[in-house]
Length: 232
Length: 134
Image: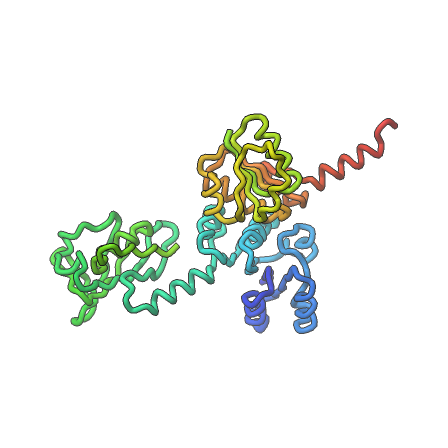
């Protein structure tokens, strides 16, 4: 399998080294900046090459026609997007992976069919959310095709959902409460299940419904407090 | 027509000035406020400092109400990125993109953008001028 990596920053460089050890892969690391490329050439030999991974003539030269996968991981979202589009639409390369530096750009990549995106910022943000104990809602997995996501909810003291049976809760559309984890262990809930402060819930919700779900399980805001900005 | 232009270089300022004089509602966006010096005093449109590859900047510049978007920065990929934001995310009806690389210009024209390549145009002009009057 021939893999072209566009961008030899920390991500691209680390990835190339990782893949290099595997004899199933033929890897080429493409770097735009001359100085950086020269250094890499000294260290890695023919594994690295100087060039612009969005330029058709350069890509022809490095045999992009027979590539199986292009991974664009520069720090520039515009460059990553165009590299993937050129790979797919000019060279017919079936698989492309783009790094999305600004999570706000993820939607455009999706709209343009660059599906496999790795967002470093989003990953870090998600990790930060996991690490904060007082978080009421932690996104776990986004289900792209359906617009749904799996979330981990923590019912807080005085939350509007606390002490209420599930059937009486006004849940956003397309919400499925899959699991309620309390001191007694994990249980599949039914309409009679009453949520208690301290319960953890695994739910499938609409990605747009995050603020509403967060509000349901959070303690009421102090007077005058601003609601927390949803994560982009 | 409401038109958002990204890039206030020589070309951007020229086309912005012309469209403004014709009575269009023009907003021109550039990273450098100094670039706006290229606009004449008579320019009645809006000047907006910011990066056109940032969707929030485009929104603030009025992309949601725009009928047309023109991308004229020095970077082909920046122009292509912003143009695709305008077309696919903000559903702007007419999107015009300058792409120096003729091959990329062709490819993205096939993908639905209205691209033009100054490289190709200048090359053709130079060639034609050479044989003019023969």
